[in-house]
Amino acid sequence: MPVLKIVNCMNSVLRKKCLKVENIDAALVALADNMIETMYSASGLGLAANQVGVSSDLFVIDVGIDKEKRDPVIIINPIITASEDKIMAEEGCLSIPEVFAEVKRSQRVEVKGYDLKGNELRYEADGFLARAFQHEMDHLNGVLFWDNLSKVKRDILQRKFKKKLKAIES
Ligand SMILES: [Zn+2]
Image 1 (tube, rainbow, N blue to C red):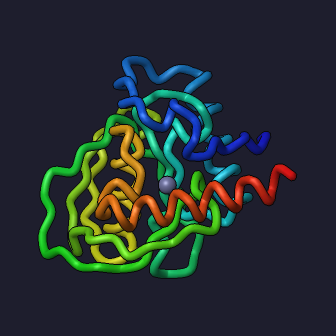
Image 2: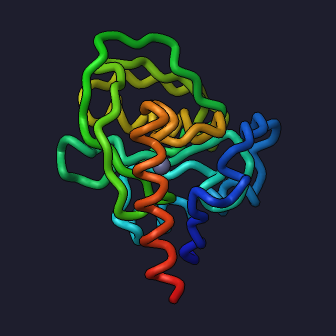
């Protein structure tokens, strides 16, 4: 399975709402497999399709996050159906390397969607996994984690990111 290129936050594909998946075909299954490979290769715990440049409504997430055991799950056309209790915790993003910030998220969520066979999925998550679900859902809606912060904080982080990008490119 090839590792795909992860686009960074300067890429406009991350700003567009992803299109609902209508057909689960061989290409989508291959994309999902490659996304799992790419996520682990980047030491990530979640990856949305638009992060590899595909504007389709699916993400992969490691639901074994709290057990330290790999358990990747693909969720197609996901929706958050319930959420409660907001808390602050540090968050990062594979598309904004080396930038971290405290973001307010729900402590518990219920997520529904479909697997690669078209079967309905439902997850209840709390803590870090709940946070990861919300982060990936945001991606599919064209939202980046720093959009949840004040403009001042976001500007600081964006400057920090652009500096790092320059250092990488030069
Ligand atoms: Zn992200």
